[in-house]
Structure formats: C-alpha cells, structure tokens
Image 1: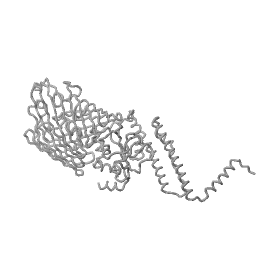
Image 2: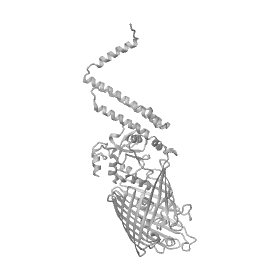
Image 3: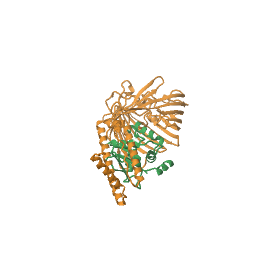
Image 4: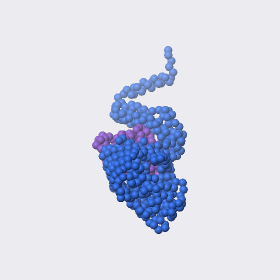
Length: 459
Length: 145
C-alpha cells in the first residue's frame, strides 16, 4: 500500500475542487465581475512594472551604469490576458503595447551615448565632445572687356580659385559653443590662411547671447548671413558695398571684441538686436586690429531688426557703427584721426521662392582737423526660384567722396560704381551650384562688361 | 504639395510631446512656430529647448516642413545648416528614426520637444502631449492634422 504525505493529499483535493468550480457555467454578471477583477489586477501589475522601470531609470541616471547591462537584466514584460470571450481587440492592444515597450527598450540601448552627452552639458567628456567641420569652395572663370581696376582681377580673361573655407563648430556645454571659420585665400604669389571668425559663445537665454572673439560686425543683412560661404549666396560675387576689407570693400567687416545679441519675441513682431564693442579699424581700409588697438578708442556698433508676424519672411531694421580711426604718422595725408560713423538699413523679404534683398549705407568720415566726407552705397537684389533654376538681378551703387583721405590713401582703387547684374543659378546637386552671370557696370565713368561663371560647393 | 496633402489626409495627427516636468501643457500655434524656427530657443522657465524630429522622409516632418518652414523638403538640412552658420543656434536638431528612442529622449531631456504620430506616443515614461491652441490631437480644429 502506497502512503501519501498529508500535503499532497490536500493539494490533490484542492485541484479537484478548483477544476469543479471553473468547469461550471458562469453567467454574464459573474463574467463581468471576473473581468473587472482581472482588469484591476492587470492594472496593478502594470503600475508596479512602470514603477520598477522608473526606479531603474533613476538608478541608472545617478550611478551612470552602462545602459546595455540594465536592459539585458530587465525582463520584457508580456501580459497574457486570460479572457474567456477572446476579445481580440484587447489582446491586440496589449501586443502593440508590448511591441512599443520592446522598441522603447531597444531605444534605451541606442541612446546611451546621447543621454550622457546631454547630461554632460554639465560635464562633457573629451571622448564625447564633437568637432563638426564643414567647408565651402568655389572656382571661377571670368571675362572682362575693360579692366579698370585690380579689384576686378588682373587681366581680361582668367580662371581663379575662390576661397577655400573651413567652418567648424563644437559644443563646450549645453550653453557654451565654439565657432571657427578659417579661410585659405589664393593670391597671385601666395596663399593666405586667415582665421575670419573665432568665437566663443555663451547662451544665457533668448534675450542674451554673448560672443567673444573675432566676428563679423552686425552691419546690414548680407554680412551676418552669408559670411564667407559663397555657395550660400545666390550670386557669384558679394555686393560691391560688402566686399571684404582685403578685397577693396569700403565697410569694416571683421572685428575683435565682444558682441551681445538676442531676440525679444513680442506681440506682433520679433525684435532682434546685436551690439558689439571692438578694437575697430587700423590706419587703412585693410588693417584689422587683431592683437592691439592703436588709439585705445573702441568701435561700437548696434543693429536692430524687426520681423513682423503679419508679413512672414520680412525683416527690416537699421544699424549704426561708430569708430575713431587712428592717424597714420608715416603718411602726411593721414596725420589726424578720423571719426567714422556708418548709418545703414536693410529690408529683406525671403519666403518660399522669392528673395528680395535691399540695403543702403552712408559712411561719414570726419577729420578732426576739419574735413567731412560722405560715401553712400547699397544694392538691391531680386531672385526667384523655379525648381533647380534661380534667375536673379542685382543693382550695385557706390558713390565715394573723391576727397576722402581714408579711401584715397588705400592701396585699392575705390571707384564709383553703378552696376547691373543679370544671372542664373542652377543647382547641379544638393551641395553644388553652377552660376552664370553678365554684368554691365560704369566704374568712374568707364563702361565695363563682365561675364562670369562659377561652380560653388559645400562639403 | 499635393503629396503632403494626401499624406496628411491618410495619416494620424502629429502629437507634440514634451517632458512631464515641463510646466507648459497648452501652446499656441504661433509659439510652436517660433520654437520650430528656432526663434525661441528657451522655455519661459529658462530650460534650453531641444528639438527632435523624425527623418525628413517621415510624414510627421514632411507636414511640418510644408506647414511651418514652407521650403522644399530637400532644403531642410540646409535650413538648419544656415542657422548654425549664422550662429543663430548652437547645433543641429536631433533627427531620429526610432519613435522608441524619441520617446525616451523626451522623457530624459527636460527641455525636449518632439513631433511624432499620436499613435506612437508611449504611455510610459516621463512624457506628456501638448495641446495646441487648446486642442488635443484627434480633436476637431487641431492644427497638426
């Protein structure tokens, strides 16, 4: 005779009893009651799971354990629904939820580094800090029927290498970043490597961003928008008024100092501002005071810009620049300091296919010994995009004061300019544009026709 | 354009999700536009806004490009590159394929904001959906349909 232990006997009796109970037909009310109980149990179970997950997440956050390990340890929650009426909809919802949760867990693995990087805005490690480098380049071909100035190039028809521009950014924390723009400029006999922008920027909030280093002055629209990126601009050349200092431009472009900028988002319009304090110009148009300031007098500039909400794409505003240009003791015609004030304004409308840019400036030079000289200039440009084509037109105008010693004593010819340009830009690829244009200009009463071709690219 | 309209009609609403710690629960369409255009880069409480998109070929991002940016979708990355180049923003927005990853990032980053199919919003984690002009997704008048 086989003798069973008492516990086993009890278990067998319980099994028979349970089997008997569940084999009974249940009515609708009992079913609902059972369903509700099951639902409550499931919800409770789910809540516990979520709670456990959140605790694990928090633990990971503070201990910085490798995310992958945690995911491996965490079982995937699968909830089996014991539904006697086989409600397929509910089952499918649970399955979807399980799939989403699995994806959620998979995502957790992927973003391990991202999480650390974000968090380490307050503690980024060397291994995770990234330096992003992008670049611009361009190659030009040009024919000029009457070359009146070296500003246009030497000779009548030639190929020329444009700028080779390396643009780099790196984040130093969530609110601090570095931006550098190094340009290789190809001259007739040498290649010049010029750090055009080197900026450390501190983001405080929407209203205040602090830039320190070498930057482009907040004057007008073109300069702070396109900088040295020829590919970004529609046309082959910059407007004549915005030629850089070393290309015979009348305006100051680069400065070393500090700049505050920001935006106030107001009812009806956005108000952007930028104001800078810098060393200012050197003794001539090409000199940028990078490591010192000859006369200790700082240049100040302020730009305001309004973006009305009612006309999307419209930006307009004034700018003002003030500096005292140091005297040049080696030049008898430049023996006194010059007070320079530049007034300017821009109206820009860019939306969808339309690009309309207009800017105007007055450059006022006041020799403290008595002479006052005014130069005025500006441009208006219109372009319209049709698929990959962008036909454009620009009018350039500059009228110098012929007695202005600051321009007269420069190595460049500052010629009065009255120029019309008609061109076509074609996007060969997403990162390569081909530009063809014809210009007719009158430079100091001399007629000049220019045909230009450019391939400009970003890499 | 026609394609975007067809996509918009065929797909679910786009949910705007943020971290639960974000005090904002209802946002105006105008403010949302300011955020998407990076004109507004900080929440009112000072937290930095981190924009998270799905890839430009996703219906969510295509609809945003059409409604907000009004540019060719191929120019979307150029749009952001210009912002970096002009020093308007510190870095590119995050573009992620996996909705799981987006859900997690939003629940991890206090200032994050993302735009995903309303059906892909995880019910777990530290996430909440924003109303736009007082409307939740799938309500009549919701602007990101």
